[in-house]
Image 1 (cartoon, rainbow, N blue to C red):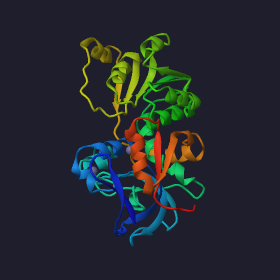
Image 2: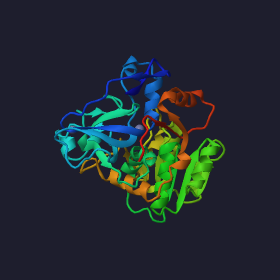
Image 3: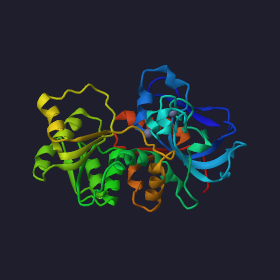
Image 4: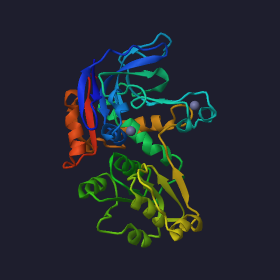
Length: 348
Ligand SMILES: [Zn+2]
Ligand SMILES: [Zn+2]
């Protein structure tokens, strides 16, 4: 089968690899669509040779190609996606359903071979069924939607509330649509890229704020603060701003990664205590029963059209042209949100 393998930072080639064979409790998925995640981007560019031997990729959809002999209720041809985390299912964290906290895990697409290939092997327990009428291309968005839902499902009723979404990559733009579907009255979306702000407005944001020109603090002061801030940019100014604009007893959801050291002035840090803020960190996308309601909710939202992925899919490439996708990402010239790769021809 064809698989994408990195050759040092930023360069890949498509190579021939052995077909994966399912173990007793595993299945092999023929990959129809797979998205390049921000975390993959990091792995493709990092100066670390460990990324030169593994097949990356963890956001994908496809059909069941083969099943292990102990696998039941799964048939060749079923349309599926898969949770990429493979937790131990034995430790105390796993027993509590806190799978993101498992220390004895492996991960499809960062520790074992992932979906930037024609076929990928996964545990049968990780399979999420999409149903016959689900458009497979949308299936590549299930994993990023679950990343949004994981912290959002910890919130109380949002009907009529004010939510700020900072950072309008794929996660932020999906979150805008989820908040819209949940009946949030004011959805204020912020970024520094005008085209992304434009997209957010089309997806249901009630106001788009370019933080290069306008201050979120000024805007939110006039509105009495945000009930919820969904921080998905990973940028330090956005994290500091989140603490300023959240209202008393408001909630800050930290979804973006933290690549740089951050400094809070004492007076700003004290706003966390004085305003009695809820600061919620979010890591991955799982809950009990495994893999969690994030996954079935994501399938439902996409199937019902509550989330539109079409405008987010800014680029599509055949697996042979994978390098072109990376060139878009690392070229820094073209706007992109989600780059979708099509490893296999699947007629379904
Ligand atoms: Zn991802
Ligand atoms: Zn565990």
